Length: 236
Ligand code: BV8
Ligand code: ZN
Image 1 (cartoon, rainbow, N blue to C red):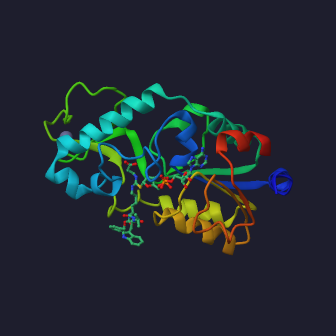
Image 2 (cartoon, helix red, strand yellow):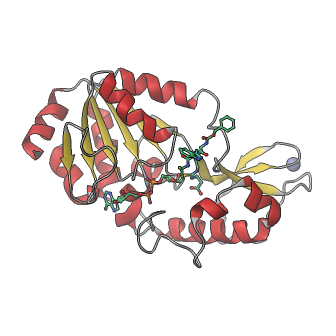
């Protein structure tokens, strides 16, 4: 299995990758649906919504502040670094991530499609201004814009559309990939998860890296059940 995956990857000129929270697990960031992923017994689906934010912006910001502090103390792990390395070797390479933690950027990845936004950006709910903010912890909860309006995290919540054009770019990358790596995602959130069958239907060889099986494990060409931080460096 791993030999087959290594060979496919070595021979591919165009590679696309879809990552989820699992790739940051070995950096100490809890996943959404795994054990320890919960925060004060709240489910992400209950907090990562515009309704929850409208009802209680302070609570939602306490969750994001907690995650920002955790992420600020974390470092990219060998899986993030291996993907940054792989990008330098491939003529065509696109990293599509569901993660908002920014660890791929810190690992040196360049061409990143952030489907669900970026926890280190803020957006004003009044004037629409959008800016980077790396304060951890936040000096004031909830944070506000210069215009005085309430700021929200620069992420995509459930029920919200992905950033304009982002899925088109991701689909294009998935359709033209000879090898499509799916790493650390439970593949339950759409439209991101739809990229996996889409890549396969477009003829890509799909390699999944996840200690557990997912709804797509049976359909991928190669399902490697191991932690990404251990396995990915062995694939290069
Ligand atoms: C939209 C950002 C439409 C915020 C997130 C019913 C059926 C189907 C779909 C829907 C439905 N009802 C609603 C929907 C749509 C909904 C959806 O898919 N819901 C799901 C829950 C059913 N999707 C949406 O709402 C999307 N928007 O559809 O808009 C629209 C269009 C036009 C106009 C208006 C509206 C928006 C979805 C984005 C939501 N935002 N996050 C934030 O992060 O705070 S989603 C959230 O889940 C994170 O982004 C996360 O990345 C994502 C997916 O989770 P995973 O990354 O997979 O993480 P998870 O914990 O689940 O799994 C971790 C995996 O890692 C596990 O498999 C584990 O085994 C593995 N692992 C663990 N350790 C390791 C490891 N792997 C490797 N190595 C390890 N060491
Ligand atoms: Zn403003």
